[in-house]
Every structure is written in C-alpha cells, then in structure tokens.
Amino acid sequence: MSPRSPECTTAAPVWEGSNTWQPKGDLHAAYATFNHEWTGGTATKITSLQLDWTIAGTVNDGAGEIDNDPQWLGNSIPDFDIRCDVVASATSPGCVFSAYKPTWVMNFAKTPAAVAHAWLIQSKLPNHPGSKAAGRPIKYLPASVRDSDLNRKIICPDGWAKTYGNPDTTPIDTSDTASCDEFAYAASYNSGGMPASLGGMNEVDTGNDCVQTYASRIATGDWRLYDDIRTAAPTWKEVCGRSSMSNYQNTQSMQPFSGTFSSASKYRLLDKDEYGVAFPEFAHCDASKVTVSCTVPKP
Image 1 (cartoon, rainbow, N blue to C red):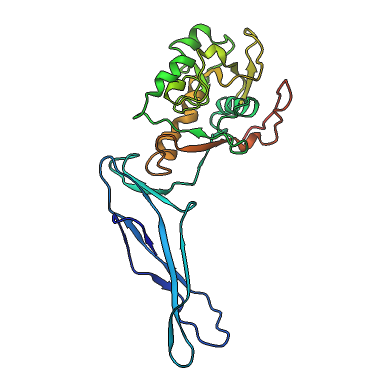
Image 2 (image 1 turned 30 degrees about the vertical axis):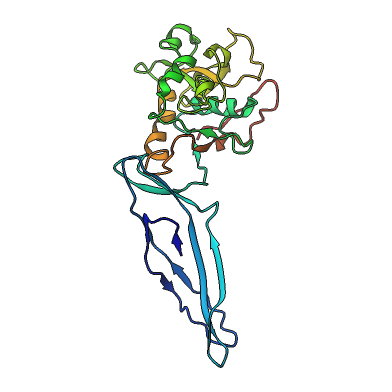
C-alpha cells in the first residue's frame, strides 16, 4: 500500500494475526497497518495524495507456489484521498481526508440567542446556509483571502447595534453591550456582505436586506429571539439574517471555531472548504409555518 507521491514514505506493514493461511478451511482474520508520512512541507505547499494498494499472495497448488494469486488492486478515490498542507498553520504541517465535510455544532448552553438566530436563518430562508440536509454547506473564507471584517461592515456597520439595534436588546450584565450578529458568518462566501465578484453566494447591498431580529433575556438563562417589528416583516425570501443581541452571546458563539474547529489541530479548513452547521437542540422545531415559534428547554 503506497501513496502516489514522492513526498511520502510508507513503512513496512505491521501485522496483527498470521498472514499465512493453512489449507482446508482456515478462515482466521489478519490485519495489516501501514504508516504513511508526508515529508513535503513548505511555506505554501498543498499536496493531494491518492493511496494505492495491492493485496497479493501465493497459493500452494501441490506442485509448487503460484505467485500473486489471488490479487486485488484498488485506490482511495475519492473518499479517502488525502490532502496535506502547511497553509492552515505554517508551524504545524498536517493532513486530512479532503472529501470529508465536518459539521460545526454551535454551543446552545453557552450562547442560546446566537444559536437560535442561526437556526432560524438556516431553517427558514431558501438558501439554507450551512444545512447538510439541503445540500447547502458553508464555504470557509480564510483571513488570508479576504478580511471578513469587510463583509461584516456591509451587514453590521460599526455602531449599528447601539444606534439602530432594537432598544429591547438585552446584555448579560453591566459589562456587556448590544452588538450585531449576522448569519451566514462573515468569514464565509455565504455571507451577504461577500461580493459576487469575489465568489460571494448571497450578495446584498446592505444589512437592511436581511431578516431583522433581536434577542432579549426574560430571566436568568431564559432568552427570546423576536422579529424586530420596527421594520417590515420578513418575506422569508431573504438570503441573510441580522440580529441585535448581547455582544457576549455574539462573539462567544464563534470563539471556539478558529481555535479548535478550523485550525490546524482539527479540520485544517482552507479556502472554500465546505462544512455544515448544526443545532441539535432545535431538531424538534418546525420552521415551515409563516410565523415561527419554538421553545427549547434550558440545558
């Protein structure tokens, strides 16, 4: 078994169980483990690898051995092809199965308002950003390609929440303040602020074109996401969402994403890599009605 790349080395197999079968009904199982090492890292290197394998042996027919019978040939295309890079982290080269599309599960226990907003927009709008069921993944936009703050300033201009956000927006405490949350995320090609000329999938002129909501805390740990009735009711044909909510809820909802999800230590997301976004606590909710109402129990 070997990769099709001169930048990889393959160690000899380590067998678990005998790789010799005796005649007349020996059906024991044996397993071979191959260790592959990528040695081609450079500052800008991305290498795609395909694994090839040959399973061969010899059979004693009584008069002598017949080589390579049985023999099976195969390769990893496409599900197990491997991509190696030092782009995600110049100090931590690594490899992933490039066909795999991970799923980001937002933390409802920590940031229920932000999760409710993302669920509503994903479930209700026709472009369903991040929905694996609808076949509409999020496309990752790394900072090295475009500063996602440029996307954000189209949907959430500086000071928008303070000046234009709903006055019933609730912070978590006196150290918190109102901020503007957008979905799909600014660091994605799905963002309404990403220009179509740069590959944006849902370009809008302004955040006013998005579904408008706000989040209020009714009691400790009890949050509500409301339609902002100061603006026109949503048509549910919009392609983005904008919500006025606690800055803590907004920023902390995505804080682990760059650290543990898209970083070199996890999925090594590169430009335009696709991933899903999930909210399991909302699985029982029905977004098919014109007016959406759903209660999720406190964690």
